[in-house]
Length: 84
Image (cartoon, rainbow, N blue to C red; front, side):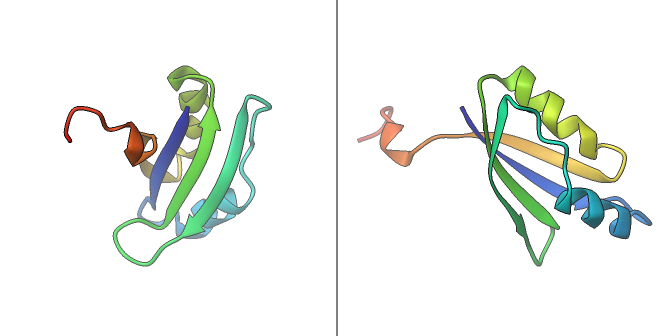
């Protein structure tokens, strides 16, 4: 499964958050596709693959002390079959 997590550093935690975004602990079960810094509402976007939502959550929870996060499941638009 492919996931996208949006990360926004908590007030007063920006430096610590950016340090953690640059050096995350990535479990063997997770394949990080890309970490992207952004300008705007979110500070960072993480694109990654994991076998399940549980594994994805174990990876993302490490950012909880320095950032708010929103994680989405992603899939190719070609797989949208409910409209034609």
